[in-house]
Length: 350
Image 1 (cartoon, rainbow, N blue to C red):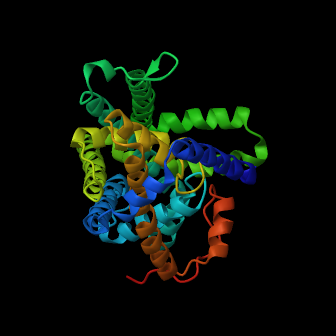
Image 2: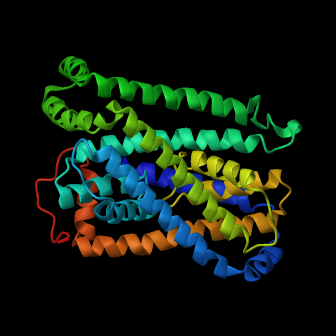
Image 3: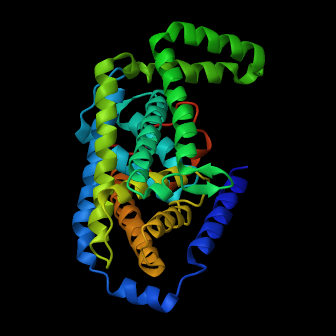
């Protein structure tokens, strides 16, 4: 099943790469890529790593009801997780960082995964807000830009916001009523699940519900909301800085729209690192602003490179420092639900 999912993602990435490149003049693409001012990637990558630090600050806020951990100890774990997302399919880096946090801080994996789900909900809402803000920067004629059939960007934003906002509302309700939520879950587990897995699901669910405890605090909700906005503004700033390496210019609102569409597009199953879906989304949005196709294509690949390779290198370095082998990573990816019984080799001594 996992192999089937992996190869489906590869095929989808291949299709999106074909769509991104099918109308490209490769001779001109090479010229644009060769002439880029690559020193602009230095401040761009620095800003991206700053956004990872803000992510670490946000995660410690979500983890605070479970365990107080300073951002300096969470930052390497965040970096390892994003490196894992770049080389493993199906965002398996999220499970990897939950496992590493278990090794470093003895936080239950299920509690970590609950906070990561909450992170993703906030990210989704922020991306939808960016899309709405960016769309207002287009001309009135393009404000209801049609994606396919009769579906526009605005329609996707409205329905996507309703779904993600509704999910956040459910999580807040569960956080406010943990005992009732656990009782409901136990009722369904006993009646709907095979007896052999009921205990595993319930053992996983209790710390998962604990991981939602930050949603009980209005102050924590405000802090997570604000840090989510800062995270994505910094990632948009990275895109703005990398843009200066190329011979085109769009305003910041256009880049907000581009970042929003890219990150919503990467929810589509794809190869590790979001190849294809990332590039096609960036090229399509820049096309709305009349950026020449070859320049937009070169920019999309260089921007992706600035987000993919540096965090991969740093994340793998942190992973090696933890003393976790590739064999252990592979084994832990196969069984993400239970807490790992075997101790991980090494581990940080900070």
